[in-house]
Length: 205
Image 1 (cartoon, rainbow, N blue to C red):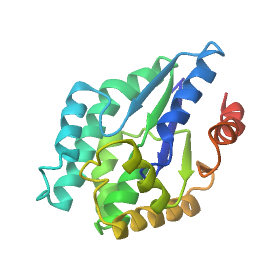
Image 2 (image 1 turned 180 degrees about the vertical axis):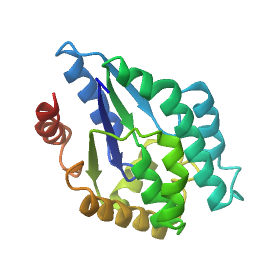
Image 3 (image 1 turned 180 degrees about the horizontal axis):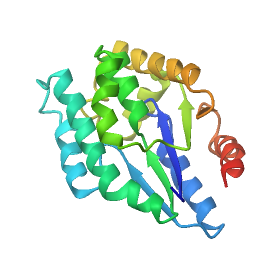
Image 4 (image 1 turned 120 degrees about the vertical axis):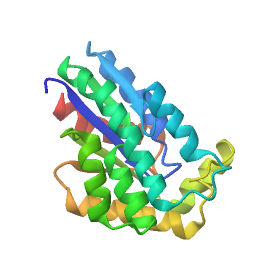
């Protein structure tokens, strides 16, 4: 692959969207071709799957159905958008990728890591981020921020224990993949966080 794949991870309310916008502007000003995308979503088919996953009316969705829907959305996303863009030498900034499935479906939902990894092995088609920036903020603060921004979706409305387990899942991933996953202290102000991001991205560029 000739391009660069940057994934952005973190619990809900970590401020990822703001930092993604700042990072896109920074890289674009350097004359690089940047594509910002998200998961679940990123393509017309994947966005329709996203609507199903996050719909508050779908409270009866089983955990394994949820995991399979995330993987289905990701498979389409990788095939239609991420892989072609990387082969063209573009820079991809993706709001969430496969690490989210480990944190949310494995750590929080309790599905075995082996099952989640097996499902996603086919979905990612050998594609993994070159670097993952993990925006670290306490789950309590994250949900508080979200509540002040908009109506919560089906995942965001989960109980505090769920969000605590997601947080623990990300802490586990930090220890497992220290070469790829880099911690960003998301409790700081916007520009402090942005400078933390640039410390890692400048090295990649």
